[in-house]
Length: 139
Picture 1 (tube, rainbow, N blue to C red):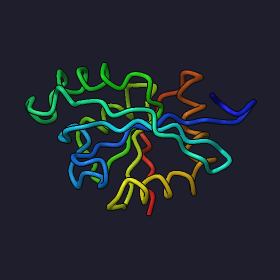
Picture 2 (picture 1 turned 45 degrees about the vertical axis):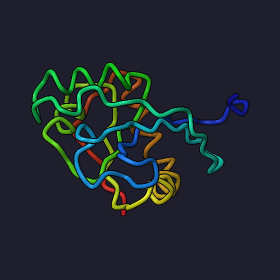
Picture 3 (picture 1 turned 60 degrees about the vertical axis):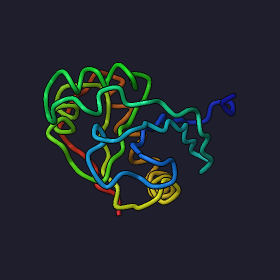
Picture 4 (picture 1 turned 120 degrees about the vertical axis):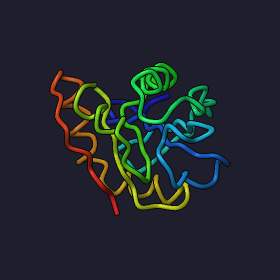
């Protein structure tokens, strides 16, 4: 249940073990961990989704489309490394890719929370139909 009127971002983070953010491209991870982040610095784990596209050929449009179907409800896609598909997502979709310099899921969530207002601004622009190639890098 969302707090009344509170801004929210749904984040998708790739991980192979549920503790550490994968040190690779998001599409090459075993699982997608879905979180709701709130402007009051709270976050809520929603679910873990299996990446059925993990073994598909890297950087291909079909892989990107399959992953987008798995995590369609996410506002942001979070990874440690920029991939060719992250660039395509930024340039062509309503989803906002975000790069984080983090080792663990809690570290990644903390970086996202520290930049909540900035990231929410990008998400809002995309929800209003604006598409732009910028990919924020959080350290």
